[in-house]
Image 1 (tube, rainbow, N blue to C red):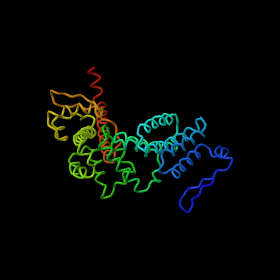
Image 2 (image 1 turned 30 degrees about the vertical axis):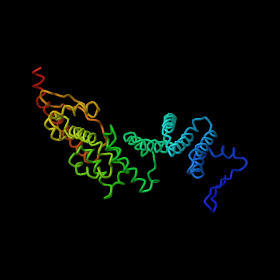
Image 3 (image 1 turned 90 degrees about the vertical axis):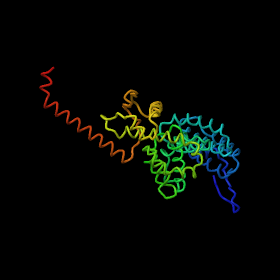
Length: 339
């Protein structure tokens, strides 16, 4: 096969007479990569023709386990063409079918990052922030970020930060904060997004208050979601309260919670019930004593400050164990005699 460009920029593809033999020698991966490359060059603005071209390439694959990744690569490119023409129902169906095939593959293949990039872009265009956030994180988990330009990294980091904060049910900010992609936001123009992620990670309402003006001007959609964003901040504040406390001191008074979350005293119980229903926390509400006995907080990825706090809690627990051991050694005989 010979590929060349004319002086006018047209692509010329010449296949030898024995093209079937050539396809067999190429292998499924190379066939898929070549078909994807050619479809984007020959039909850059003709999604229907690109889909037909890629479908024809899929028919050249054999129905074997070795050909599944190549099939998924071609299907993903077909999905990109369908997304270009905004055929969202067709893209959703294709994503569901391709995901089933990928689940049957044990290893991470070249098809995985392409699939997650397509699925995340689909959810972004659909406007579903939470789904975009989860799919984009999967993409980051299997893609080679060194192949992305600085601008591409910045765009992905920006979109992920916005999706994390606006996404319904997204309460995990540590995974994005510790990922190298977040470094793309470390410049004066975009560091307000990084500061926003840190504020939500700690449930720091005062820090986020200073950033509200930029959210309103840069992300108009956030104005309509102020209530949801405030609730998320308050819930994360409760999670952070429980996390900072040592294991023997997890009783949180309603007054303390009201002060940290900046809600009225009669709203604390409702906020706690919301956190319990979302499985962010576990514990018992004592309405009479107006105390929440916290027994568990949802596991999450920690930054260095939070790891340092956890280390201090572990050190305190170890000291308590040693003190108890010494007490038993000193008074063990008296205790046994009393029994």
